[in-house]
Image (cartoon, rainbow, N blue to C red; front, side, top):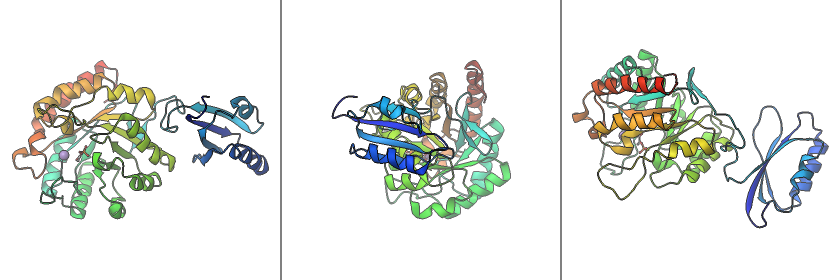
Length: 344
Ligand code: PEP
Ligand code: MN
């Protein structure tokens, strides 16, 4: 290991290690001035050792009688990294698998606007084959004068739509203050603007719900994976990543969909990766080619904004698909998924 360079090592101890043996090994490692953190694991003691590891002989660690395995990781996101977990993670949401071999489509309006609106859209997207329903209740808006979402009332309309259709729901959390209201939400979305809200990520690491983590609009893939690491390090292993476009200099689309992020993330990490072409492009007719492209590069699913009256939508109407167009895209996406030997 190179001197002066930050490195990480994951050490897995055998199940029946004695506390005294654990303490002795801990003290020896600690004497090198490294940081040793516990990685929550139901079956064994697992440590993440970080710092300048150049003076620690990995073979010395490996030969300790209570050490089961040692993984040397050069990435600053050990738990999210594929070197820690070589197989793809499948995140189950109410029995729906998200990850390797499946294509999951999350559809619905940008914001919940009324019970009638979310119910009508939920029924339509379900009929077209969406597996989860989206809808914002607490909306992070650039302007303080723009519609901020129906908030708690919006959540209760979403829950009504879940009850009526059986579709699990995905909705964004904009502040930890509201977390108690999310008890019956199936997937908590962390939006692009909160990707680096580290206190929120830490708290979600302690919560027992799948988290859909969207990439910040000016964040690198490494930063996205480090944000995922915050949630994983807290013990919540149900993290789904989402590429939603990044800011570039071109001004035709709302953002630029970084399709290369999908294979890159899947190469470096075992977590499922979804693509949101709606916020990436902001133009409805681009949804079809971008959805197909996302599946072609290996995305585990899509998030698409769908509205039954886009012209009068209170948020993101201009980028929303009509229910009819969504149905059309779903038929094409199904054919594409089959072509890629994936289950949809
Ligand atoms: C959304 O999905 O409603 C949203 C606000 O997306 P993003 O955080 O990617 O902008
Ligand atoms: Mn939106």
